[in-house]
Length: 88
Image (cartoon, rainbow, N blue to C red; front, side, top):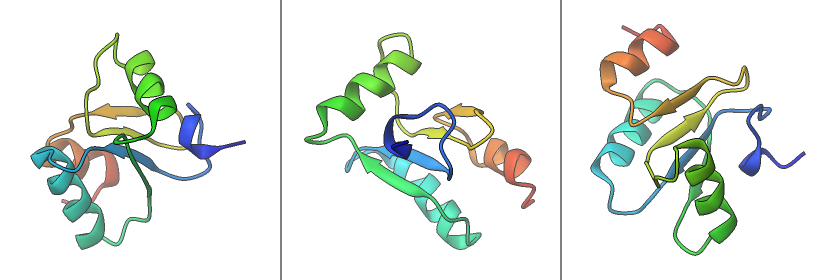
């Protein structure tokens, strides 16, 4: 199964765009806390754009993060990431 388009990926998947400040913050958070993830850039990936829109009621909201247990985080705050990943 392709983790890029799955609601139950085998790893954390984060959908991003280049100029998104929330995406930069989430990437920094994951790197700072040594959390491994697959980053999927929406630029030039029409299938990924459609997938993200299907999750977010037609909106291309980023970052959209999908965890292996099926949890979906959309534009999470640092506090929400701390709660989910227990890093606070």
